[in-house]
Structure formats: C-alpha cells, structure tokens
Length: 496
Ligand code: ADP
Ligand code: LRH
Image 1 (spheres, helix red, strand yellow):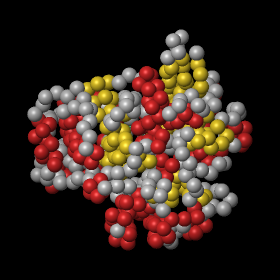
Image 2 (cartoon, rainbow, N blue to C red):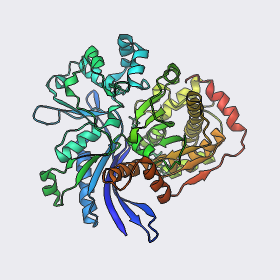
Image 3 (cartoon, rainbow, N blue to C red):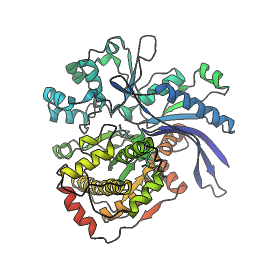
Image 4 (cartoon, rainbow, N blue to C red):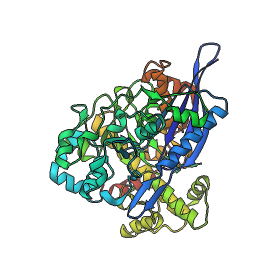
C-alpha cells in the first residue's frame, strides 16, 4: 500500500532537482521509501560586473516547473521541503521584495576578510562563539563585505533570509529561518543557542534583520494562493527540513547505532562524524573542523574539503573548448593514466575561485617539483588520488579529535557515482567504504517531512527506513603499498 507522498527540492551548487518520495508498506508491514526524480536542472554562477551571483529567479522558475510536473505525473504530495548549499542569503525590503540578486559564495568580495575580522575579534573568540572553520564564504564575511562596501541594501533591508528560507518564502509568502542553515553563518552562537548580536554589533551587521531560528521538522505554511492558482494545483504545506543540504545528506546516512564517519561527496566533500554537542576545543580549531547544527538535535563535526569542484571546473573548461567529455568518460581516462605521478593539495586556496582549473593544477605540480599532468586523464587521476589522500588525513584528524575509531567510511552524494573515487578512498584509508545513497540530500529532506507528518518518530527510525530502502555498495581496501608512500608525500604539502 502507498502511504504519504512528499516532494523534495535539493539545490546543489552544480544542479537542482525535484524528487518525489512515497512511503510504501508491503504485506508484512515492512516500510520502504520509494524515490522518483521528477525534474533536474543546472544551477549556474553568473558574473555580473564585479560580482558573481546565483540566478535565484531561474531556480524559482525550475521549482515551479518541478511542482507542475509532479502533479502532472499523478502524484499528490502533501508537503514539500527545500534544501540548498550553505551560507548564502537574500535580503528583503520593508515591502517584502527581494533586494537584488543574491551573491554567490565564490564571489571575490570576501577576499582577505578572514584575517581582518580575526584581527578585530580574535580567532579563538570567533571559533568559541560559532564553532566554524574559517571559510572565506561564511555569511559573516559576506555581510561584512557589504558593510565595508557601504551597500545601501544593508540600510534598507528588513529581513535576512538564507537561500532555502528565501525560496520557501517566494513560494509561500512566509518568512522563516531554519536552524541548520543558521549555523552555517558564523553568526549563530552554539553556546547560547541564539544569534550572536554582540558580534553583529561589533562588525556593523544589523541584527534587526535576523529571525528566530526554527527546528527542522517544523511546518512553515501552505503555498501562497497566487502560486497554486498559477500552477493549477491544490495546496501543499512547506516543511522546514534540514535545509542545509549537507545536514539533509547526513540525516540519510544509513548508519546503525553508535558512532560513524561520513563523507558527503558532491561539489564539496564534507567529511566528519556525528556528535550530540559541538566540540569547541583549541585542537578542533587548529585542525580546521566545523561544528554544524544537524537535524534531530545533532551537531556534525566536519571538515570542508574542496571536493569534486576541481573536477567539475576542469570539465566545464574542456566542455567550453568543445571537448564535451562526460564524467564516466573522464573517470575511464583517469583509470588508464599512470598512478601516483603527481598530487595536489585540494584545499590550496588557489583552487577556490572559478576558472583556469587545469592550469592551476599544473602550476601546483610545477611548484612542488612533480611531473606536470598534461592529458585530461592525468589531470583527473591527480585530482582523484589527491582527494582520497585528503580524506584519509581528515578521517585521522576526526579520530584524533573524538578519540574514537571508525571501522569504515559512509559515502553519500552524487560523487559516489565515481566508482574509481570510492575505490581510491577505500585504498587510501585501508578501510571499507560503504557507498549510498546517491540522492542523500533529497532523501534526508524527505525524512524530515515524514518526521513533521508523524510518519517517522525520530532520526533513528528515519535512518532505518533508508537502510531498508536503498542498496549500499561496499568497497573493500586492496593492499597497495603505493597509497602509504603517496600519503607520506601528501602530508609534506603541510596543510592541516
Ligand atoms: P551538488 O549537490 O554539490 O551539486 P552532486 O552531489 O550532484 O553535487 O555531485 C556532483 C558531482 O558528482 C559532479 O561534480 C561529478 O564529479 C559527480 N558525478 C555526477 N555524475 C557522475 C557520473 N555519472 N559518474 C561519475 N561522477 C559523476
Ligand atoms: C555543500 C555545502 C557545504 C557548504 C558549501 C557552501 O553543498 O552546503 O556544506 O559549506 O556548500
């Protein structure tokens, strides 16, 4: 029998998608979640003058199309939820209108601001009051950049909405602020569990803009009458899910009871472990880990790793040159290339901004006296081996910080379609990798809708549903001594 039907929108930095989730029960009462993709569309960064922006109205358009397609296909979801990448936001004026196009987190206006703000506030204080790794794109630096540029938008703004809350607002007219996204701003205080208005005051960021955060699993409100009329559909309730995509993905890790390590593998690679409290030690700060608020009262101790962005950017460049090589084909070329020829440190700051990625990789190899990768296969091999080694380093650091031992690594997200990367990761770790599900963020998004609707009791029951519904691919490590030698070389790049 078919039970509840829900609709999830998952907006990644590379693509957005709409998926339908249906709760099915077999004759023994065993429940499964069946997931069907309804719509997928590219998400683009657009340079306008000196700034890099998201095309937020295009995303709204594609979401409306997703809703229409869902109903046209005969589904009748009772709720929908939206999750997106972290940190970005829009500002509304007193009439509730959006002030300009939201900035893309890779916009260069935050360059140099980590150092400047640390100088004003103190690095330790900032870490203790936010629990976050110092990333140039954190909302704090974006708002501070606007302040420094004397942006009139800040003066006339009335409401700050993080991207998923903004998209929910554009569909429902209801303004809200969901907790997991709030914790990506570096302006939310994990100790007081409230906005850090004192920090905002010191930096000239207007605290009047910020709404009281709500917990994931809260019903926000129905689609606005204008939207239901435009789309010719019955109404649906919006649920504030784990609106930060990383947190939705972690919610869908099919881990049993007890500590586990995860890698959310998409544009970014987020590697870490689930905690019940933030870990605000000096060591966590020095090893550059973040404590991000998760669903169900969890905190996720994790490291942001540059991830498959390196590969995406190379592919984009090669596509623009008319080469049009698909991801599976690039992976095949990498497999044919020679092993352990050259490595990069994925988190070298030069790789953060868009453009010229293959040359940046060559430049890194040249500076570090390694053979310079030339062909596409050599470049991709270099990226994948380097990522796998970085994962080993981050997992060891997580073990060190938590004094726990992890028997293997759960990998979820679009990146696990790259089987070579999963294999390399198992080999680099010398531990098994359990890969799946691919659409973890969308599934985690659905799970919190099921929690809101009373179909799942809690996170534990939700994760059991994932384990019962989706297959896991197991990658056992192979004994290849090349990986330990390469790890030694990698550690010489000297970043934590
Ligand atoms: P995001 O949510 O950040 O947009 P995804 O989780 O969708 O990212 O993952 C996108 C990444 O997945 C791409 O950068 C690419 O490296 C990888 N990927 C997507 N499709 C394939 C495929 N068919 N084979 C191998 N890798 C793939
Ligand atoms: C991954 C992600 C990550 C953030 C980055 C901006 O999509 O949400 O957790 O740090 O985007």
